[in-house]
Length: 310
Length: 280
Image (cartoon, rainbow over all chains, first blue to last red):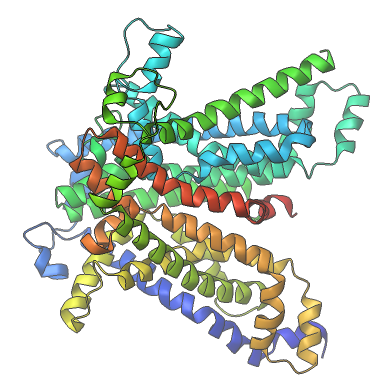
């Protein structure tokens, strides 16, 4: 019997299952059964009147899906489409911002290795601030009259004569994107820096001797070698930003209100419809659709970046 | 470009980014030490005139913030304890054994990360209601309910991190112990776990921080006496709309414990998080 077989014989497999059992039981109860129930609920009419009937609520087939996607009379649909637009812009901007800032700072730190430790610690502080605090704090900072942002813009730098409104109208998108970048970019920087530190200096030195410019070195050496890092960050970024909730919910109406047509994201929209307006079934239908779309997005990611680097 | 001026420019940029990045935290702490009047009139806004500790006293006396803080600590520590046991066992199993269904389990671990939390929330709420009807055990508004949900919820991502750590431990040590007659469980406990300790510590910190930051489930699954900090803050902010002084004091109290913990354990956290980026 060779070494590998010792590890693979039948008796050991029972250990494999035993070690997994607690997690599998938990996941069955907390993940899989709820998904099934969620799918069932999306075909029922579950609202505040039928809540006590639980899964015996009236069956309405695909009506919820129709209301969410196609019904021109449904108010839910308009709100949801605004939320989709905002979420797409928000996700793209946050990922670009985090990745760009993270990359620039990581490159700068990598050049000055003596100060890496100090600055890395300082930069990581915002990433430890809880997201609900981020929303609360920035909501206060964006405040029209007493917020520090308008104070800086009008009194210190004098860029505006009149203080702009940040939490009303299209500006709202900036007001939710910037705090999210502020909160998350250190993580991107940390990962990219760790990746940069594994690239051997010889590669860049050889390229310099061959007469490559800084830009060429970045484009043809650094970026391809960092692909395992930034592709994972891209995936994590897409998932976490599409499902972003805390920052927006705490910034507007102090956790209870409507963030406005330019600040509403998918999660806040679905949460409000489900729990404030008691439309559990429509909320479930919307989130199931979202889930399917996201599975498609992640499948696309796999197609492009492969799973070999996981 | 001249290399000295280049260096100065880079350092200058790094310092500027640090200042902008840290300013909101400074702003939060400064405003937590002002009276609301000072905040609203906006004179001398960047500094504290006379620190007003009274805000923190009010937070404890009038808003019962001590209770929220205590609840958050209980929920997060117990969650971390259970979640780390589940994910260490599962991560070890997935990295060491080959067995039927491994692919399915690995894929479902990833799949759970793609499902929006709200898909789980409504059914879990309804399941808990049903469970109460059937067994008379109340899970909504109690610690066990929330902890049970959290402990399982943070496991998939933790397993994913830990799997990598166990995979990086050479199998040969365990094989030697196996030949010497050690039982599988003892190998796991006495060899694999100690060797993977940096990874386990990092994962535990990750679980704690994620639980500390969780609002949506806590919102629906807690009641007055089991509220965690995010729910408590949300409630009190709704009641005290314009008390920015108290709001910032609450935000500070929610942030400082974990900021301090991060400062002490940053070495572990950074090593744990970046292990995936570094190993190839």
